[in-house]
Length: 154
Length: 105
Image (cartoon, each protein chain N blue to C red):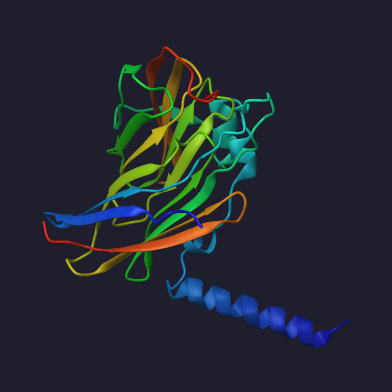
């Protein structure tokens, strides 16, 4: 066995642990460049939650979705989500009838408002879920957005 | 390399309001070209926004975020004159980093 390699590994791990303990590096920063392939390949809200590490989700009136009832341009549908749930840690946009239903997932660090706006493409009329992780648990709100012409086929 | 992002960061009361418009095709992988071939997916996968060495927003995206993506959010702790840095990386490994100075409210 290459003992030097073991030593390096040990030291490296120790440093990381120290940095984490000192609050220099948050887990979200360490994982910033990772992409959750499994979550983006899912077909249902339940699968998305599972791929993100949750076990279920509760509907909540504390999550507000602001989006048009009818999308004027299905390739550019503006959606805002705001959560009033304490300790909101993440907000995800899930479009039930899209080929890849998870559209975007935002990590909300402490100090950042539990609010985000983005624009998405919609294949057809669909329920749009705002999935929120707050204090380690998942909550959601839903809104139907009507589409007259799909945005994914171009 | 992709065109620069257009970033607006300004004070709204105690908070920094950030609006960013990125320049990217965000090709869904569902679209066919003129000869009927599928155009391969090409989209931004990771976005990180940082201020004063701290991540203030990070995101993972799929191919259904619109072409030339737009994001709007707010964070606490910034002051006019300070920098906000945004970077993205797409599924082909292309990346881009841009900065903006926070303006007064």
